[in-house]
Image (tube, rainbow, N blue to C red; front, side, top):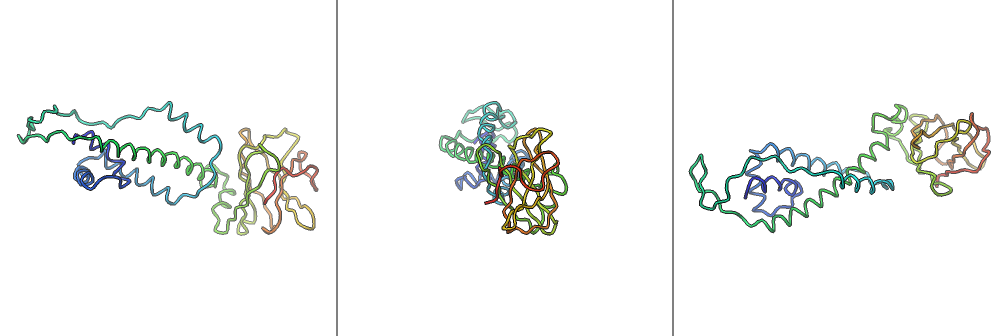
Length: 257
């Protein structure tokens, strides 16, 4: 088996997708190849990260962006040393021993295609995982108060459902330890300066204002609001005049289920 074929078995080896004979050959090659060692480590770390990942619904734009990236990104082959002539009777220049005869790699290539497809799925899933990390507050770009709520041991996620279509995605993360809620979302409309979003706690006694928040120009939301409300209320969001209202003046556009 040539050096090139040994290199391209790294992905399948990391996924335990090699036949015993192939695995034995690759294990013998691995200690002497920094490139393969690095690739195997990367593939295994990716698989381990996915095993601990939280499953979430990806945004509608994910599939289009991944396919667009695939169509414009060329995968480069590994950098390898020049190969000797594939002459079955040739001898190694240094040792003088005959070189091994060529091996039929048809089955090997078929198995590599399966492994490469699996790694493609891992790469796509990893994009989702990265999106989850950014969305749930482990990203350093989040405001510190929002990140503190998301990472709190008592954090409770409360999805909000839009009362009509195309309103975006919004959720509340509640933490009594942090005496407040984090509002995290995307795809919301950026309101005019004379309007604002307002969060309400609603129960049999009526609606109580919790606080105001806005979406940025991209429709993203990452805000912290102080509150001592318990989680057994209905949470609602309305659009109010700038400065907010003491009681809702419009119908809720988001409600907790």
